[in-house]
Amino acid sequence: MKKSLIALIAFIAANAFSAELQTEDARLLEAAGVPLHPKAMFIHGHKDIGFRFASNVPAEEVQQWYRAQLPDWALFRKEDSWILFEGTQGADLGEIASRNQVVVKHVKILPEWHSLDEDMTTGILIMVPQ
Image (cartoon, rainbow, N blue to C red; front, side, top):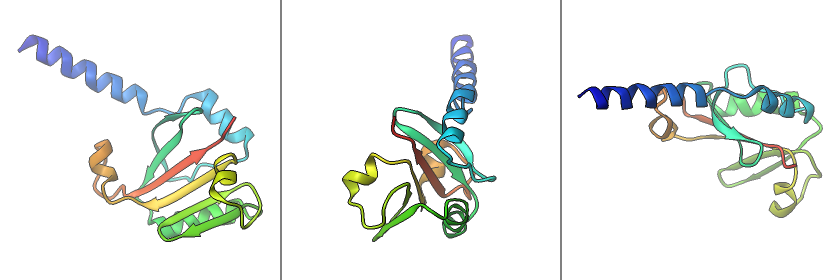
């Protein structure tokens, strides 16, 4: 019982600290000119894999907010993909992958994946390739 309690406390502590955007990562996003939506909560990530956030604001509103914040960025939209990227309209996915980008979409299962409140279903992925 005691070992189980210690393991549970260690797990909670590790997850609490891992869910905080590191200062160096925040500086990287700022230097890249990528703002953070005011209602975005950091879930996980780092510069090598991208930064995943969640929000309880509807995806369409978050998309509109990013379009207003990054008006010179191009938009790739196909089926359920919504990618705002620093580049030229009409670029292919290969080119987009090498650019700073923000992906916003409704992810119904996001709360289950990351133990979030049920209304946290807007996923925000920010990539800043080095």
